[in-house]
Amino acid sequence: MKSIGETLREAREQKGATVKQISQDINISREYLTALEEETFDIFPAETYLLGFLRNYSEYLGLDVEKSIALYKNYKISEEPAPLEELVGQSRGPSTVPVRLIVIILVLALLGAGGWFGAQYLMQDRPETEEAAPARVGVEYRLDESEAAWKLLTGDKILISYEGGEMQMAVTLEDSKLLIHPVGGGQELSLLAGDEKILPGGDGIPVVGFRLNSIDDSGALLAATRTDVTVAQAAEVSQEILPALPIMEGEETILLAGRDEPGDFTLNAQFSGYCLFRYQVDNGDIVEKYYRSGERIRQDATESLMIGYSSGGAVAMRVSGVNVTSGAAGEVAVKLIQWVKNDEGKFDLVLFPVQ
Image (cartoon, rainbow, N blue to C red; front, top):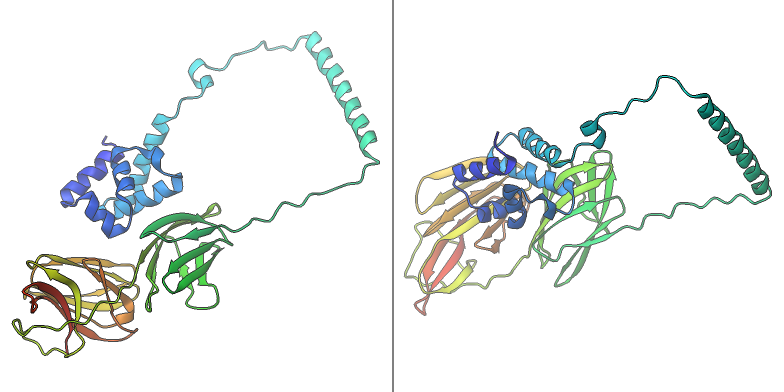
């Protein structure tokens, strides 16, 4: 039977994906994905993290999640030493109890009873004191890096600093749900195990994505990612390249600037609600699909990429690491992204709103 590491590695190789690519797609560190394939499980901070990452990795590779968990548990059992009594067997004593042993037991019982009554006599005049268990102090977790994973309990807080200040979110575990609510008011998120939800950014506030990997009495295992919103400069587009579709003048945005030659660029889109999304790569066939909350797409292009969507507030997009503003909830938009040669002879990757 194949081990869990061999199963994961073979599935990834059959899919033709690299660990780096999968790490970007499912927001799990390459170090942890490699550890799962190499079965170096001791690097995980806790088994709940390991099981959550194993579940996500197996789902991405199209494997049976329960079989993957079973393979890991079989590995764990095989690594544990057998109890000594199972190796040497239980010792068997005589079937009858000697009289001397009975006398010793009776003497010990009388001594024990006398000691108990004596202790009660000495303690009867002492005032009874009952120390209350100290209240748990909530832990504050900061999301200063691009991704993090935490084990959360009720009363904990998530802190996200940005250029204009700091956003604080309180955490509450309620039955099988994790509630994340901004301190001071705002949109509350409710997540069940396996749910992914996004807090849209704007005005310098980063876009924050949450995925609840598991939740039980010991806490909630939450993975978090942040994408800082950047303001791109407006472009003065040369007329050397004219798109075939009507462009809204004065609202174009430079995503990548000053390249010697055009090159491949990548669109990453993550959905926080139902959204009809369509795209056309390098003037090829138009692909259209209806996406649900938590789903993602990744698409590479060389020359141009046309995108359109039915609800701007339901999709967060990045093009080669640069955030693309999608608009408000329910807003319908069509955008064209393509390379344009500027007045200095360099190439800029420009986003055009299309009428």
